Length: 205
Ligand code: GRF
Image 1 (spheres, rainbow, N blue to C red):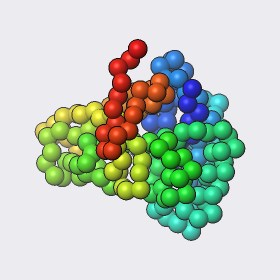
Image 2 (tube, rainbow, N blue to C red):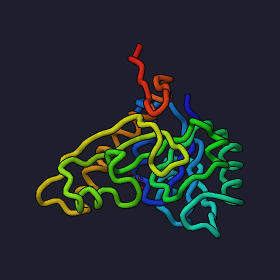
Image 3 (cartoon, helix red, strand yellow):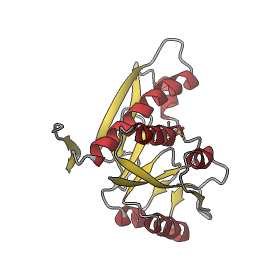
Image 4 (spheres, rainbow, N blue to C red):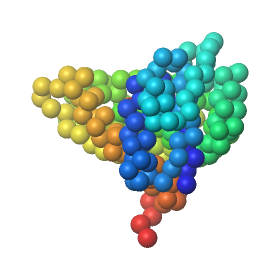
């Protein structure tokens, strides 16, 4: 069983989809803690509603990365809670070598685009502005790059004629809530194997 820690900065709808998949019995994992860099992030409240330990860790002085003393505190917190795997879920920070080395090959992220298209911020808006006809989401292992790690699961959605950034993001998020539990379930059941850029998925026994 995966002992999962979730890191997030926002409303936590993806974290919610993970809690619910576990509660339904669709994902063989236990969420041992949720950590946020934003004190009043709804993800913390959502975790507590599910009886999960939730902790704010101040990431100052850094604004866009997890580094230095905060990185040490996050690693210590996750280890003391018994986490062996990390899911980033709307965590608005670049993770650096300290965390990557402490949880080597055991960190995944969800990104709201069909990578490698539209890495970075507000990818749904990037897709709309670019004129893409298909958008989607990607769950991938995390490496030292920005949204560059090996891909586990992708889901596509159409971009509709009358879409706004908000309606497209909402459609992508509905797929995220399917994709993230699905990807974690593949990992939890030992069916993923990374070979270079590819994540091979073995057939269910
Ligand atoms: C999602 O769109 C995710 O892909 C991106 O940030 C958003 C987080 O949403 N990385 P939520 O906090 O899980 O609702």
